[in-house]
Image (cartoon, rainbow, N blue to C red):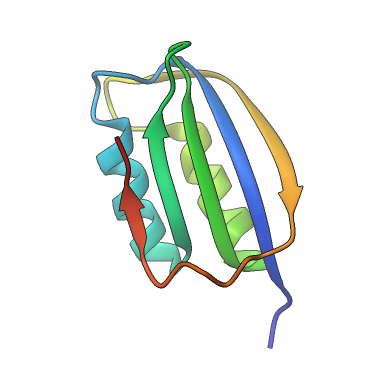
Length: 93
């Protein structure tokens, strides 16, 4: 079984008001990762993902693409210890 990892991503660009959070939620379901996505006051989107390392990496690549009307300029990634406290992937406000 693959090692479980935690990652926090800060996604910058035109990522608010374009369906990015819903896109991230659907991508998380496809890749079977848990965590959350939320908009930040500075215009970025914060994504926390936990799951097997290969699945989190594949999820990250989808985050870089974003939904149709978004434009991802940058993604900052932080490694975290997986908390194990998430059972699903949710949109937070």
